[in-house]
Length: 386
Image (cartoon, rainbow, N blue to C red; front, side, top):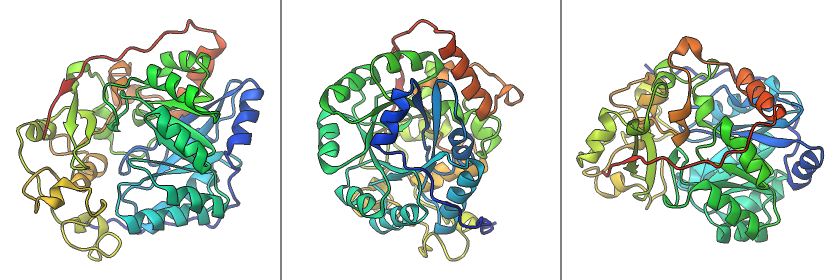
């Protein structure tokens, strides 16, 4: 059955700008940023406004909405809903440069039109979006995996940077570049505020703040909160896991490494099985995604998708796999991207999951208690290839 059109709230006022000056003012006040990372297709829906509404003694929340594979109506509705939930809060949008170029520009223009607090972009490099943000008056943040890229984005005019280390969920850059080392490298390469990201959990926050980061980004922890809108089975897939339940796959996106919860689907990829695209009318309706009705909705850039480039005889359809996980909760056939920090999620049942507000309150309490700084380690993971 096709999804119904979302109800789009009335236009709200512009969100406050999360630019370089605003972040420096937050740091000068003795507080730091707590950014909720955007996660894949619909995985983090409903969370951005809850995090953006947080203004604590030690942390200022910033919520991020994933624009990936959302229709124009879906993205606009989520932006407006988050802004209504967090009046005066920082609400941003995450974009991937690897997606279909027309979709990338359409989503960027929409986010600018909706006057979000910031746009953050990864999965490739785009100088155009920095220019669009400048012209539209929206701060830009680049996701970086090296000091070199950090310096490049500063030269282009970024407002802040997200240093994403090898422990991140989903697509990761250099699998041998753990966040503690990357954070130090990026801080040395730029004068811009840096947010440390990738596999961060509550016990890591104090370390990265003490190391000089203007804030930290947490994503996986918010996947396992009670008030996110993702399918309950998706949340359950993140509970009670060990290092053996985490795998590195070879994605259809340029053959990049990507971290996911191990299941029957990732085992199929490890055996080299191809998973070609199927009709998506059950979700996007008869008119398809952005008017594209075939099984392959060309979600990625023309030369980016290994599945499409092989005539659908190799790799897999990432849209099918991610929708199966987030919307259907299909634990056998879905792709459940996750950060390495899932092995430290303490809850074991859905009934135990905290709300986003409770997660933030717990972080505030830990920082207030002045807990000992611990240097995060990088656990070994099972590696697979497709």
